[in-house]
Image (cartoon, rainbow, N blue to C red; front, side):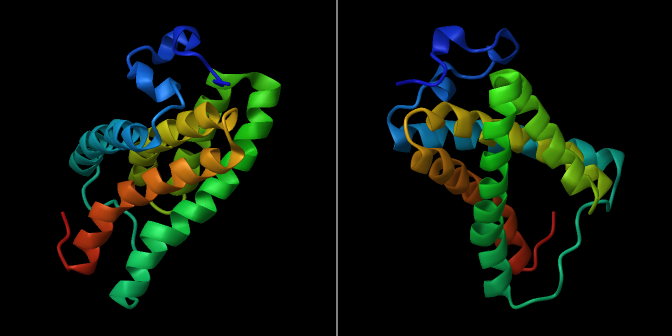
Length: 169
């Protein structure tokens, strides 16, 4: 039932927790995957801010509730639908690791179109979201879409709350 048994995970990704490649215990899995996405992206964000100050994305002035919805619900749902669809094609033609790497690079490039330094930060969480999708794909297509959506929403929640509160780091 597993898409990629932990003992067969790509050598290039063995630094990541084994549990990230095992589609079991969804609540525990979400916590592990969120930590794997969020904390390294904080470090990447600090590095990008240091190297290229004031280079983050700009967001339109909208109602804070709408902005929160767009960042925590709408973007994760839409981007996961796109990511998952593309990942299924990439995996079929290239395999697990190339699909994950191409997906994360593509999302980094796409987000760089808005703000170049943003792409330096975004590729990492999308690497994790891509692993999550492909790991859960063989178990259930619904879970393959739902778990990255949830993890992505959690990834965006902290920054979104800071933005709507008026704090900008």
